[in-house]
Amino acid sequence: MRRTVVRALVRLVGPLLLAAVILRMDDRDAVLAALTSASAGPLALAAALNLLNIHLKVVRWDALLRARDIRYPLGRAWASFMTSLYVGMLTPGRVGDLLRIRYLRHDLGVPYAEGLASVVMDRLCDLYVLAAFVAIGVARYSAVIAGQLAWLTWGGIAITVLAPLVLLIPGLAERLLLAVSRRLVKEPAQAAETGEPGATSRFLVALRAHVGRGLLFTLPVTVATFVVNFVQGYLIARALGIPLSLLDVTCLLAIANLLGLLPISIAGVGVRELFFALVFPSLGFTAEHGVSFGLLVFAVIYLVVVALGFVSWQIAPPPTAPEAAPAGTAQP
Image (cartoon, rainbow, N blue to C red; front, top):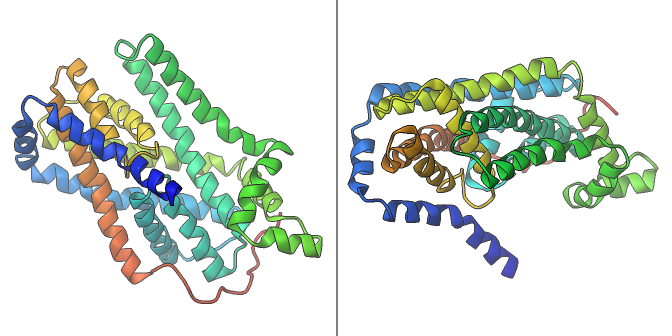
């Protein structure tokens, strides 16, 4: 009970930050005025681009699955991806991604370890491409992010890039993931009885199998998803009448997306607006501009996706029926 309460309180940090930022503003009415007067055309186009962004992500996941000889119908992949995205948007840490593993298990009989490997590599692509854009952003705003803040920022980027590489180190990764795999799947206990490789080993072998030629396709697709996201931000800025360049929007959203990964809010609410409120004055705008921009980014990019995911949940809810028989998936 204590841990549950602590987790709930931690998730409130972001909304509390947003409330604090708004309350400390000199002209709170300016935020409301900017939101209500935003141009509908650019906002509608930015919202429509969510479909392109999601499709690119589904195509990337499909490529990862096909690399392991898993054929998942595109329509079902869309449904499972959207439903898991819906849950992920409402929970810190992208917990909803785990639903995709359940869909694969139910529909195709894919082992949990194999499905987990596809989801983890999917996320690693996002993480590494995001880190590259964040590095561009930090370099771009070197005059603002300087001194100890610069060291902390670059250190955070380095940890973000280097930490996942532990999964590629034989021996060490197996020991670190053994406890986690026992809580997530049943295969380790079954493997102990049959003498077959455990789920941890199967997961790591499947994950490492994605490191190779397949990245020549998945990484460019990942870059494309971020470019679409940055174009959405550019359109939102135009809707608000804020003359930000596409490069500035790219740098701002990249850093905000990295901060949004902190498990202290849902979809980065509060953290993103605080960052924009601090940075926008250095770009020649007001803190009110920054908060308005952050709130519209949340509404157009995140709330629209949540709405689409809610519809997907009604059409294709998480499976509860008995699982399919194991399919002819790739074996490590």
